[in-house]
Length: 353
Length: 85
Image 1 (cartoon, rainbow over the protein chains, first blue to last red):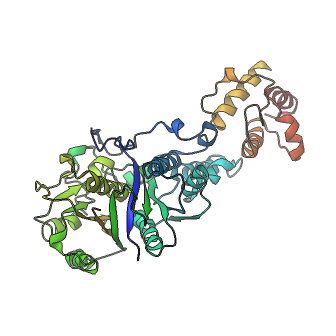
Image 2 (image 1 turned 120 degrees about the vertical axis):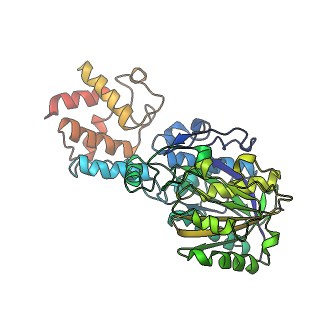
Image 3 (image 1 turned 90 degrees about the vertical axis):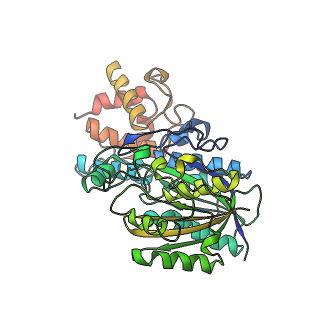
């Protein structure tokens, strides 16, 4: 089996992360319950004629893809694999609202055409003229990891050389309203650095696009992707056993993990899953978190993947992502763990090249 | 008639999301499709729905649309003589 490397990346998020010349140089601090992604200058990447029908999610996805490709110093890829939890939710909302507002008459095609989950992958393919395999995984908070797993298998088995993999989700007004009503979004604003200890239920919602060029050729790479594993459900008390088994199946011991990157989102009801690991297996391991910077969305774990890749490449961990005060002695191997509301757990193992 | 032309320009810019184009950029006799504003077949469908929804005009023959949507001038003339609302 071939090894798989991360050769290029880009993150469009609630922080100004899309410029690969900087690595979280300055942080935008929020005090809110919903935080939007920072817009790159879309016109620099997408022609106005093409951009006028694109909702924010598509534009973020296309820009992140183009920057990731440039970062990997390639023009196109063999396959595009996208993960998204909600797809193009703004156009979906618009189309459904139009049906209701216009009494099922006068429906225009644009919002309908652009509302499907695989629109982002399709538009990226058009923009970078890729006629290869194009697949979109829609599986809540393991959408990105599902895409990652597909890419990993294809590259390991040499079915492709370069694959663009990413996670993208956008905020939609109606969806935000519904998630606020049911308490999945925090009722009261929390500050960026107060989020993790907010002691309240719900999360700070956001949006973003994180894309990566994965390859079985190591060229100017960020890290090696060792393995990905997902679980739809698992019992919290079994977490240590599952993590240990995941590491052992990849011939790693707990002591070899230099850092854990965790998906804490400040939801007092569900952050306990992370606490089980940070208070047991990884109590003496440097712990990193990131959702205070990028917010929660179905593919926010792709931001964690971006963060871990950047840490391994730069061998630098910004102080404001440290969850505990143990600074890593070395940064060779990183384990990522994420879950959302106690479901859809994912484990990803990355190694410095 | 000039009010209707201005109204059409505003609606086209808003509904077709023509970024960076203002009402002043569209001349009454500019081609809407092809070399002019560069609209395409999806836009044509949007315009057909707009005629129906906003002016009560149902276009049953697609060939008819080609002439009506030639320019703001032709659109305004057709709407002025066929509108039911």
